[in-house]
Image (cartoon, rainbow, N blue to C red; front, side, top):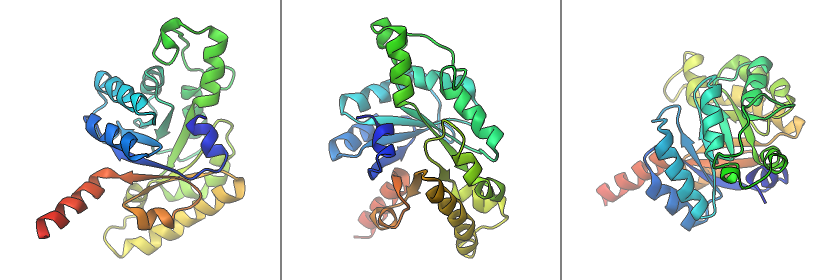
Length: 244
């Protein structure tokens, strides 16, 4: 069963957020039993050769790969999906028009306008027919917009309703900065705005993808998938080791 099908079925999925190069962490995630990794090519390197190697490592361990691309980067969306990623997380989606562009970049016609080829890794290098590749892509490809402003969170219901949007992700750091708020005092105000988006997604039957720092945050996250920020997890672990 694909990650998309499991998310649609309401399963609680767990993943790890990491940046290139982290092939060792990709394998550890698979060995540990996580469901997926989210490779951050927005705030980290977008080296496609390294990305292919990380996708290969993930597939060897039986876990899926999502990739966070940059803002409005259809060419990168095409390439990461051709390499075998099962979906994309698209930052700075503020409007329905932004969400539709993300869907168009990730899906083949008629839903989208992604360039078609069967000789990519995703097409098994031409070993499958065009019809099989189209069907697999439709069943597999996830599109997850990131809501990172007040306007985006207020438009969550409309963005969730866009055909081809599979889940939503609130980006708390960008949301906080966009509101002009930093530090501990910002947390309550940011949470209030984010909660509106979560409620809209719940009412629409759209799952959330939530970035969390550990098991306690994961336990209180809304329905959908959680992705552990492995940089924070490791830093916290190293700090505790240093203080032991």
